Structures are given as C-alpha cells and as structure tokens.
Amino acid sequence: MIRVLLAEDQAMVRGALASLLGLEPDIEVVGEAASGPEALDVALRTRPDVALLDIEMPGGDGITAGARIREVLPGCHIMILTTFGRPGYLRRAMEAGAAAFLVKDSPARELAAAIRRVRAGERVIDPGLAAAALSAGPNPLSPRERDVLAAAVDGSTVGDIARRLHLSEGTVRNYLSSAIQKTHARNRIEAVQRAQTQGWL
Image (cartoon, rainbow, N blue to C red; front, side):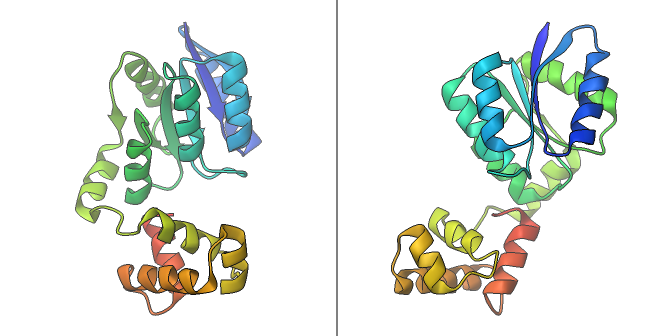
C-alpha cells in the first residue's frame, strides 16, 4: 500500500483528490493538510511514502514545504501538483528535490499512475512544461533578489522591506534595482509581475 499525504488549500479540490485516490486498491490517503506548515506537521505524524503538494498555499508554498519534508523524512517522495504550469516553478521544484511536477488538468488516472512511478523511484514531469522550462532558461534572480522582490509583492515601501528582511534601505534598493534590470522591467511592480509570471518567486 502506498501511503499518500495530500496538501491543498482548497477543501473541495482536496476532497475530490482524496476520493479519487481512495478508489485505487494500492493507494491510501493517510493525511490531509491545507497549508505548508500543516503539511510538515501531518507528514511527521503520518510518515507518508509520497507527499502530493499544491504550490500556492497559505503560510508557505508547496515547493518550500516539500524541501522541508524531505529534510526530516528523506524516504518521502515529493510530488508537486499545480494549476500554474510556470517554467520557473518546475525548476525550483526540481532543485528542491521534487520527484514529480504535474498540472491539475491532467486526467485522474494519470495521477495514480504517477504516484506509483514516483514510489518506484522514477521522476515524472509534465512533458509540455518540461519543454517550456528548457526554453525559458534558468532563473536570473539571486536568492536575495528573490526575497526582496517577494517582499515587495504587497506594495511595501523600501523601509518596510528593509525592516522585514533585516537589511539596510540602501541594500534593498540595490537588490530591487538589480532585479528590475534582470527582469527587463521598467519598475519594481513590473519586475514583480514578470517574476511571478515566470514562477521565479
């Protein structure tokens, strides 16, 4: 029996996935979570073979949660399931050790088959997304530039960002300027939008 953890913030989607997987004779959903931190807690409690994580969840994304789960449970295989087929997300997921990256509009039978393949040690990636990620190239932003740009998403001032990230205002301005340049944007709002569209944040 393959023990699966489901992490998805939309209760209806999570319930539908649990019901579909419950129909499989060799798959058991042993835990459910609605956020990144909760996924880690449930994983520690249930020790699943496979963690199926949505990317966009409150309290931290599925890629970050997956990396943390792998740290504490190295035997757990991480699968990312997302609505957003962005090339940058795929690269980040693979760098974080995910074994699979699938978009939610895939047929249900493919999900069960992917879980079995991942449990057997294979890597499963949506083919269209893999091609897009290769053509898009790597994320040009450094980790610190990503942090500063992510902190700017809600329209925070340079001072707010500096306090939140424990940096000087001058350093924040430098990182923002560099991120604007690398994303070929005219300002930080446009830089944020471009980075989000590519899945770099």
